[in-house]
Length: 204
Image (cartoon, rainbow, N blue to C red; front, top):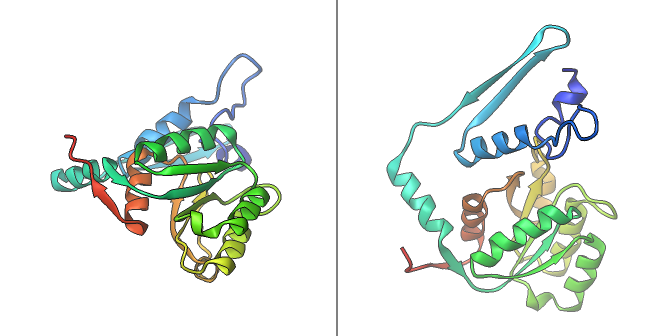
């Protein structure tokens, strides 16, 4: 594979096959499973030579696993403003957050989200936004919302295989936590638990 292809191989629906010959979901699913176990997948490829995948998984820590399981069943209260231009991602994230006990205002337009927040900033307890979007980036949206309410916690979600390394910008726009796609239930529960008060669900 060339570099351009390697950068996209874990994206859902990306495929180099002809129409109706592949969905592009295989590697995306594998990537999601490995990340959900806090693992890493390393790809090495040379055009005309071949490709190798190396998967690294952490040793099992039973106490840590139990803590994460509990965080996934934590129930919260409040309203979260969720912004992502991809409808599929927006729907999945909305379902996960709703299961955690929060109300969700899900929008696929950062401009619309900004306007709604400015109309009633007291309604929201947390902003969760994608990084790469049309109209404005997640950084730009976070910056404008941070100006209105500097105390509002913000979780930034970056795209497949991309990391948010600009710490100066993160601090300036009030980003509290960063996550990478694809986001699993345990990850989003843990992230929200870090920035918002939650209570444990007594259901086993």
